Length: 583
Image (cartoon, rainbow, N blue to C red; front, side, top):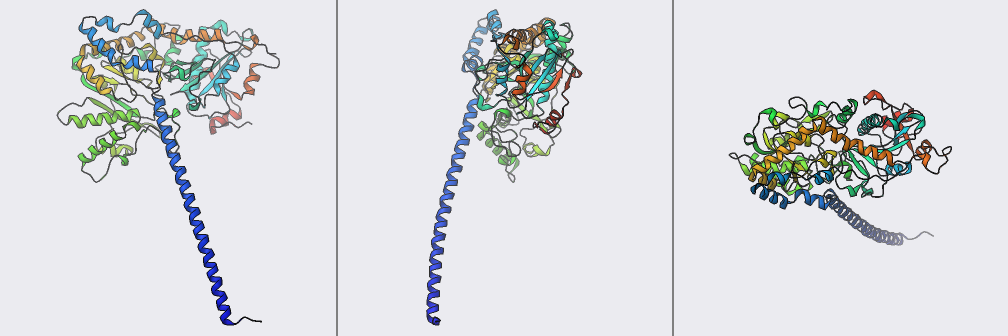
């Protein structure tokens, strides 16, 4: 029987009310759920930001994790005070000249404990790229460089292969009896290269290693971060190539780059006829805007690479268009000062210079003259002046500066070797030591092999990693011109000595020959271990650990034709695409 129309309408209204009630309950429930989810997202985001901030703080602490004793020894202001007192008392020469014991200690070569192939393989687990294992193959009488399949193949590998080529040559040249073909045992040496050690940061400090790892590039200043790493010459013409030339010439000739004062080499004081009192009293530098220790910064990747310490900061964060130029400049300087702790060292120096210029006004000479003259562009280094990338900075007179050649820089009284990609500057330190002026040496978490041969307050004045004491060190030097001049002359004398047969020969023996001798003596070949060589050859062990032969060197010369890349398809694709795929 059909329901009356009135009853139908009533039931319809009830149904609508029920639907509305259920819908309201659903929407309320959904809103509550959305609100709860939103709150959870906010909490997670807040936790992420806090964790990120803590990681940033940890990284800041890591950057300053230089041995406390070493740091105190180098930058202790009391030392400078005692130095000045000794000078006033007429004991200046004794105050800066280290004793024989001091010299021996600064050149001390650490003991190397016995190690095996397996110990060398353990080192590979610490590195993410630019690390190889060099093996002498007695059967073929060649040196073979191995690269682990887990590692990316990047441009930094070129430095590694350059290092392997020169190392193989020096080994055969200096120790011919050890590399005698089938009658000799294999030799295994772990080798790293690059601006800085390309290690996993979470593996540090690494103190369990036994096999000596030769680092051809900047190494950790604090040896407790990687206890078995040995700093070796950087793979550049001014460093490792000079060692190769010395070996090639049997110690009869020092490379020209360490002797030239008017060509491509270093610039010396007396060759230019400059007098100390005629030099411009500013801290000068013309440097490249370059990422600082990128391999040790584990920030997010936003396309360009996010870092805890900022290189090339975004201009719009500091420069506000629409303001009068002078006001805009002053506000930009204030913003740089407020963000000082987050800036990379070279931008910290930019901030110090901008403030010095602002304080000096138009009538006084600013104490700092540190500018970025180049930056890393798509095709190498590009001048900052006139570039679109730095036009906003240039418009307010901050950061950018014209390129200065060595002879122009030599007219300044004070220099600084600001840390770059590897935490040092491979050519800047030696170039500036040789110049007429005094070097303010920028300390960082890394060092180069040559730094161990230099002494603070004798060859240079040390400056803290954050540069906050640079102005005070400048003031000290200005107030003590006699002492500053003698330190400058000691740095120049150091560099002149390296250009002599005696000076370079001593460094060659201490930096290269003696460590290699100890490594050869410490290595325990397969024949001395309780392994059946028929089943456990060094080749089998390397293969089982995914170490792929990629480069072969005769060791008969240091030229590029003494080595060749392994030409199998897997290696070729690895080099081309960056990752290893077995074929």
